[in-house]
Structures are given as structure tokens and as C-alpha cells.
Image (cartoon, rainbow, N blue to C red):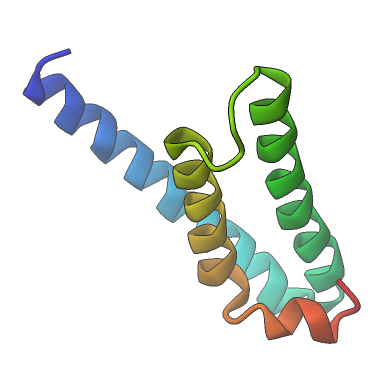
Length: 91
């Protein structure tokens, strides 16, 4: 993959993240009762990534898993703000 292809892929991923954050943020804002559901979904995403790393024989602390977990946390923060929103919602 050339640098131009990598730049296009990076832009596509960034755009998808922006749309996802915007959609989920709007949903959480308009329906605050969705907060526990969103908190649980982000927790599930963490669990899926961790389980997948273990299942594939990799280490949870491997660079791919750590980067993926970081992205999930960035999206969570973009949607819900601080993690206190989840703790306050019982998540």
C-alpha cells in the first residue's frame, strides 16, 4: 500500500469515526436514557477486542489491540465525555 492509499484509508476511517461520534452523541443528547446502553456497548467493544486478541493467540498488550482499545476509548470520550457519565449511569 502506497502512501497515497494509506492517506485515503486514514481519511475514510476518520470520517467514519466522526459520523459515528456525531450520531451517538446526538442520540445520547436527545435520549439521555440511552446512556447506560451506550456505556454497555463501549464496554462490550473493549471485551470483544480483548477476547479476540486472546483467541487469536496474541497478547492483550500487543500494539494492535492497544491501538484498537485506544480508538474505542477516544470514541467513547467523544460520545459520552468523561467515563464518569458511565459510572453515574450504573455502567
